Structure formats: structure tokens, C-alpha cells
Image (tube, rainbow, N blue to C red; front, side, top):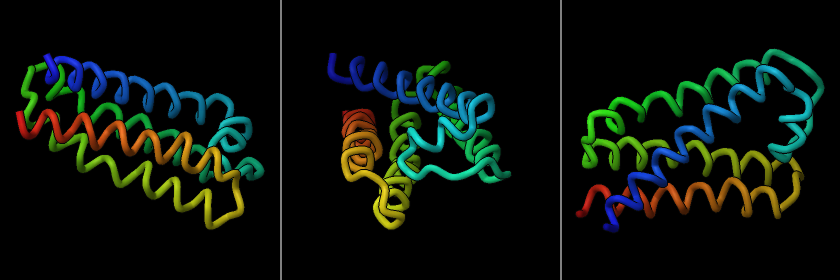
Length: 120
């Protein structure tokens, strides 16, 4: 039961980050503002969109094949991205609510889901 919940959370995180990446490709400036560090349009925003889509796609094979143990390890390895995003927002004077409430919370949910998938 707990592993089912963790699997669903992993899938939601994967789909969510893919959608965020697509938004960065389609609406880069608005996406940067939502990220917590608004910047003018530049190549970085496109790179961020591609990175986010890739991050979401990486976990899909384990999700589709039902390899929950591998899914847990992939999610755990991916926790570095939202933690890094949180630090970027904080170091650049972005809103603490976004840093902790979006990026930090994402990292915590991912770590919890990964722990359940790896340990159970």
C-alpha cells in the first residue's frame, strides 16, 4: 500500500517536471518568475526547459516496467535538482516561500517517496 502511494508520487513528480519543462519552452519569462528568479529571455530558460523534461523522462522506464526499487534510486538521485533550485532561488534574493514551499517541498516529497520505494 505504501509503495503504491510512493509509486504514484514518483509518477506525479515525473509528469509534473515534464510539464514544467514544457512551460519553460513555451513561456520562458513567466516560468522564470514562477521559479523564483525572474530573468529576461535567454538561452538559459530553454536549457532549463529541456533539463526538466529530461529529468521527468528518466524515471519513466522504471515506472512503466514496475521496477519500484530502481524507481526509488532514480528519484533519490533526482532530489539534487530541486535542492539546487532552492539554493539558486535563495542565493539570488528570490522569495523564501518559493524556495522552501516549491523547491524544498518537492525535494522532501521526492526523498520520502524514494525512501519508501528503496526500503520496502
